[in-house]
Amino acid sequence: MPQALVHYHELALKGRNRGLFQQRLIQNLQNSLRKTDVTEIKSLPGRIRITFQHETAWESVQDRIRHTFGVANYSLAGSLPIDYASPDTTPLCQAIEAAIRLHTFETFRVTTKRGDKRFARTSVELNREIGAYLCRATGKRVSLGAPDVTVGVEVVDYTAYFSLCKHPGPGGLPTGSSGNVVCLISGGIDSPVAAYRMMKRGCRAIFVHFHGRPYLSRVSEEKVRDLVSHLTSYQLKARLYLVPFGEMQRDIVVHTPEPLRVVLYRRMMLRIAERLAERERCWGVVTGDSLGQVASQTAENLRSISEAAHLPILRPLIGMDKIEITNEAQQIGTFDTSIEPDQDCCTLFVPPHPNTRSRIDEVRQAERLLPVEEMVKAGTDAAELVEFAFGTMPSC
Ligand code: ATP
Ligand code: MG
Image (cartoon, rainbow, N blue to C red; front, side):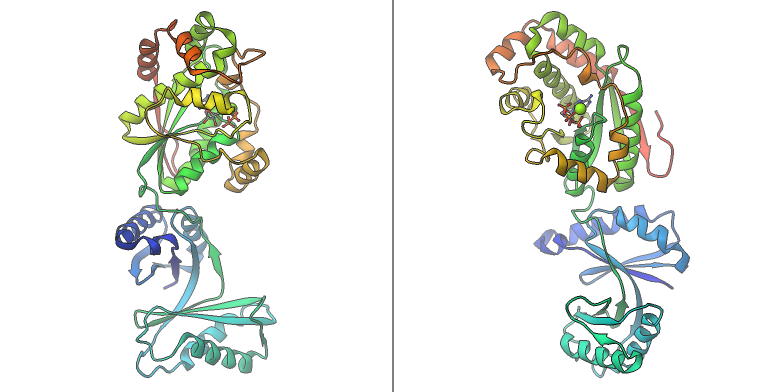
């Protein structure tokens, strides 16, 4: 039966936690591959082996592997049992030759990893032996620098595995290994990238979106649903809270000084997000802020905004510029949805000259004019929950 070998990087560095991380990665792969024809997922020393029934399923299997955080790289692999004490490498060389003949190539190299030092040859010896055999059999040349094909050989668990193409995985840490976080998602370019970055570090994301209804249309919500649905392919399940914010913004506009509005909107958003974070056992709140990008993201305003929160505010994009964020959005696949025109609630009642250097004392003073606790409770109570499961339609 066809097999794939999955490798992880950072997990190997995690000392005593390594077992736990590995177990979680295996569990996540099991969940992710449930609807494919995978028959076994097995932990081998330093790697994971995935066995599936038909080679034709490889596309769907690798699509799921590519969406599983913690996977550094993976490859489709052939395998043969091998005797550790007196290894006869001829059958292995023949199997590799048969596989490599299916490729068009001029140069190759062999890279062996001995997962088990009891094996009676060193990696270098095996590289030379297989390399010499392939040169003789195919007439092709070895190139260590930039070969057309790299033959990967791994000896582990009394088996020699070989592969001809190693693919990069998404990297990071397995989903769930870093707890839950609330991600503020706006439908713009930045916030989905921020969420992705924290998800990649092992966080399970719970999404919160503030919408401007009844003053604005549903477009931003629809975009956010699409974005969350897309990101769900990395964590299989996701929850999105849709919080009505239009009335709240109107109250802020009516009662507080115009230049502080943007900061006050954000502080209110954070407070509501924190209540939802508590409900969902989250340890932090993620935003797509990038220093100095817009008025709400100056150093002074970020400080005034953060002051309203108790949980850590995580801003993974803080040191990135728009071009870097845009490139990442394109790689992740959120860019096209993000740039669809919408009406985000942030565009509602925006002052022409927002204060870019708010002071905490003036912000606090302005908030005394608002029934903050009542507003936070009303916003939290009105939040509508939408649940997403990978491969199915979201349900309210
Ligand atoms: P984005 O591209 O993520 O919309 P932006 O550059 O437009 O970011 P802002 O509008 O100032 O910047 O928003 C900063 C951050 O505040 C966003 O990245 C997001 O995390 C959060 N945020 C803004 N608007 C909303 C909203 N309507 N719902 C939820 N979170 C929001
Ligand atoms: Mg925005």
